[in-house]
Length: 165
Image 1 (tube, rainbow, N blue to C red):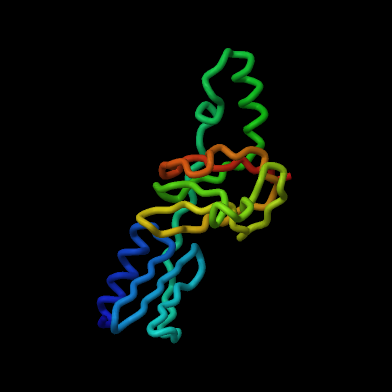
Image 2: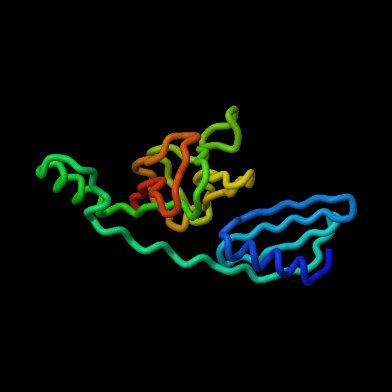
């Protein structure tokens, strides 16, 4: 694989939003992993070769208060809008399948009531046979898990509600 092909692959990955790609042939073993504001490493035959700056994904736009509250009687809607407005939404950066743990035998990365820190793994979203760890961008307490394990998720779908206080 030529360096231009590797650069083209990195550009493609940064445009698609994938966090990790592994390619292995008889001649080359290539592992590319990226995270926002972190350098991507290219590994050829187990040796770190070329550090490349990763493209940072833009932060998701905040959702209007009307989309947070479920359709319900007016009194209940007002109450849940007021309650959930103080929470930060952790959204899916891609379409895929949501997993709460690394494998069925492992405990969940986080549960309701857990205190989380910036950079802590919250869940995995599988997209095209690639398992992408979703890390927290905020510190706080998990208030609610919005998605069931092994459920499909859409881009920008709320995964967790976090109380930042």
